[in-house]
Image (tube, rainbow, N blue to C red; front, side):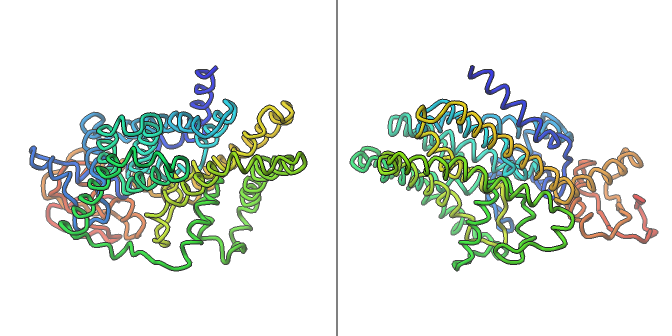
Length: 465
């Protein structure tokens, strides 16, 4: 039964995200490919040195990922996407394993895993190779949590190694000790001291990591300024809505808290209605309806008494895993909630799971199928909207167009050649990584790229019309 279920999940998620396999390199991908170009072992070791002019320090998911991918697949993005998607499938399984610690029934565990696997919140991290760090850190985070809950301090060395790997993957991993501490405080106050050595060891690693990042290598974070004001509430609101498969663009379409741009509604009124339905129906069927039954049967008190720890932990999970991000309101994006969504889904499924066998079997199946169908349809709708207007899809196509055209016209270029691209469009320049795409296409850093609609007569130059 379990194998059949996971085959169905694999089919459903692959069908939903199938377009990711057609996405070409674009924008930051070319920068990552350039960082992954090495000549000797000392260049390889530099992967693990922070760049003071780059805000992020993600050597495993950036430099090493593109280095290994380039060795195996060359300049073919399809192979890179297969690596990304393989880790995503692993994340689905880890969510299933993790849900067993908080949900009692097998149908609830399958259901929460299904919702995670077909959530549109993963769009950016699956479609943009440069965002692989969010897929990989989710894998390491979920794996670490699963190991911690099963073995606690018995696997201290393994957990410390995973924590270090997570820190080298994405900064979201800093919240692992915070989340596990929250778990111990909420669930087992008296047993917290048993894991004190593990927490001290992880705290030392985190302290050294912070010194490495912010003192030894003073990175310029001017474009990622933390803002400590009421905007954090707005940021959490968006991650909440994105957890229900709202398209990322909705953040730019909301004039006020509930007012949507009329121009957006004129084109995407049906899509917006779908987003609202997927917000309301799951909450009504999975939370409100079960609570009304509990009130009717006078079981609400016993429900709260047995489930309040899980609910508090789920809320804590959602908020804590977003803390490194929500204070940067100008740079929030759905894929950053790839870990946090588990907290929302746990809240969503919890009350229906508690009712268990007391709920009519047919009614329970109807509720689950209704929510699942609406959830899938909304994710599909978001995919459709994103493929029409999201810059990921658009810039990928722009990059593919110019790269294919360049290689067709000039299969090879001499060193120090000036490549003139017939475009002064800003988005074309961004899509081609400010010209680094050409350097990667020909594997030659000596090439110089100029964007201009005027054909200049330069020595050692070629023109891409």
